[in-house]
Amino acid sequence: MRAVDIIIKKKQGLVLTEQEIHFMIDGFVKGIIPDYQISALLMAICFKGLNEEERFHLTKEMLESGEQIDLSAVNGLCVDKHSTGGVGDKTTLVVAPIIASFGLKMAKMSGRGLGHTGGTLDKLESIPGFNINVSSKDFFKQVNEIGIAVVGQTANITPADKKLYALRDVTGTVESVGLIAGSIMSKKLASGAKNILLDVKVGDGAFMKTLEDAQELAKAMVNIGTKFGRKVVAMLTDMDQPLGEAVGNSIEVIEAIETLKGKGPKDFVDLCYRICAEMLIISNVCKNQEEAFKQIKEKIDSGEALNKLRLMIEYQHGNSNVIDDYSLFGTAKEEIIVSAKESGYVKKIHTESIGIAAMILGAGRSTMEDIIDPTVGIKALAKKGDYLNVGDPIAIVYTNGKNTQQAINMLYQSYELSNELVKKSDIILDVIGE
Ligand code: URA
Image 1: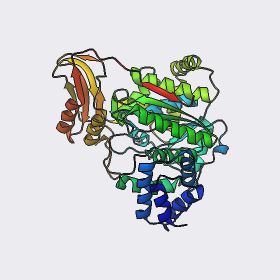
Image 2: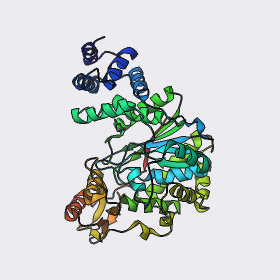
Image 3: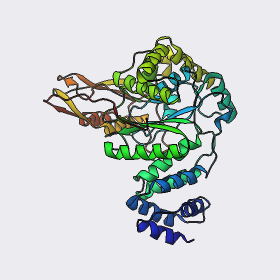
Image 4: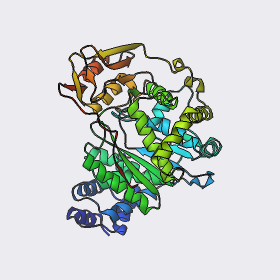
């Protein structure tokens, strides 16, 4: 077999065999096939695509390139959720405790934020003392004892994906449904859970800008998961405005805690309920959405869900008193209210710009080496369809002085107003794999 023949075959739009995919990926991981040949193959894939079988073989190859987490040591059914990333996405911090309060196990490995989207690990690290580097022995012990752990990677999973992703990033080959689906699903499959809920974000603040593209990606991922014997449901959810209000680290954790106390922003509460309901239904805990909603509300009203978060913080050496005293997070030096300069209905929100504005204040990273300031960020108060009078607050900026004016200017430019009534949209746009 020769790499060049496989590249030409894909360039001609032909279907690659399992052996050919193995030859290329395995050769790449072992350093036998050089970057320039893999780059050419990736570009050919971007133009010609991968069919279902090819996507399956690519995912399998990436999955088998590294360690796979064996969750059989966990007593109970392990469920997982994954978001493709958005602005203000603190869903895991609410969904994981709720799901654990039903006796299901959330043994979750999360990631860090990059660019305009935040990462769950960075948010958790805004809790004083919170440790995300947990040994696999302690990880299993914690999941068995309290049903919930959210940690950084405990094993070397999918090294092929790491190497491929780095190459895709610099060769303009990230945007290919087959490559994205394989990349995300190989990691999810390696993490071991039987039931997986995918939250595919759609819109200005998301990776997938249109509903059609997101549907195609969601179908590809559900299909791959099913072929590997997992139950997978993908929810397509709106990212044409920040999720909830808070965009930052400690302010997002506070919003998540408020939500577990029954006081979260409506769009965020709706999303958490819908995601939890879907997870409970695919795990045969609840029969339908109505039953699930009722029971989720009981878990919140009784404090059981919040108690799961408290326990997780304690097990991972964080100060759980933050739940009752938010001042323990520390605060930014200044809070600046950004007010409307004209009146009208909020027609469009440039969500990615809000994510970038929060990033330049210090809430996120433009490179993996940047250091995060946990206390800064933005509260995006105005929602699509809201009517604003001159002087009404659009957002609050929490700053320690870094790029403050630039962030404020970006916020002004992020909101488009109209004199015509703008309809509010549902946060769930589609569900695939039910
Ligand atoms: N996230 C991933 O993990 N992989 C991709 O290819 C794109 C987004």
